[in-house]
Length: 266
Length: 175
Image 1 (tube, chains in turn red, cyan):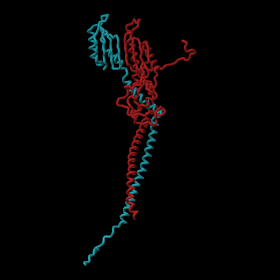
Image 2 (tube, each protein chain N blue to C red):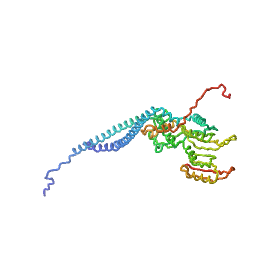
Image 3 (cartoon, rainbow over the protein chains, first blue to last red):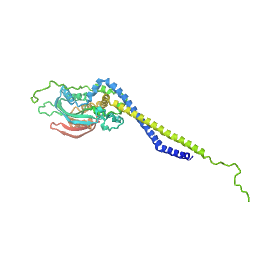
């Protein structure tokens, strides 16, 4: 009988102990786990949607080999400065203006161009895969990045001088402006050619400062953003624009015979 | 002596039945205990299940990310980024040709250029010109000011050169 009397308070104590020290923490853990599961599912759903979009992009990408060439010529992934200079030289030759010099200015300068589409701020990014030198599995889809790390091109400066008539210089500038590799004119100075043997008053000298660029592939891979996964196919209008607006072809550098027994022999 | 009978003559209330109360208490205790243990075990199981689901979701997410950042996908993303870059760059092309074209349109026949200097930063155009008379000089300034293409046209005056022509400089901002 005495034992039975003790059972009720003892059970009550056990119940209270269970409720306070076991059930309540479990309940709180359950709430936290529910939230964590929802978050994990949301991230998974987002990743699955992005993968589906990426697959669609890949299908389009694989079917447009020619269009890819157009874009990669316009913004290459390497400097290819010899190709750029060779092309400018060829344009000058075709347009009948004489070179008075050409110089690459400085080293590569990383630049966030004004070309970053408005209304498309970087909201997140995916670090490159381990193969691309990135942290890979530690990646987070919604990792914010500063705008300065978004679509950064490597810019190269080129200063040059040409001599010719006004019409020829103008035609040369038009051809450079319509060059199929991106370039922009920073400054232009045109004046009369200052040479002692310049008997022709219509002969002008033009000094140009150009910028051209390239976009490193690893940099590009680290600039994956929400817009990349917009579910929209590639914007082919820009490729048509380049094809239609820009008519001056890139002139590849062709190397002739190579090798010399005495490299110091003129 | 009066017989005082303190014994109740009515029905007697029996002593409280402690045994029944204790039994009820034991049953209630047992039920509460079972409920509490059940709740604990249920929550524990549910939590372990949730943890398992979270881990599964995380594993799947990691697989998705791995697939997403595969080399073949990066090619497509890189292409997408190049397109985004090219979009604005193409739109702004050929502006310098507009500058030259508008100078051609605005220059007076009795004026010629000695030099032209264009800076893209700030869109500033500096012209060094020669006019055949002072009147032509001021007409030229007025004509540039009336242009829809240029703004903030300014000059620091004109001087007669050794040929008797009027030399002057103009600074123009491009709208």
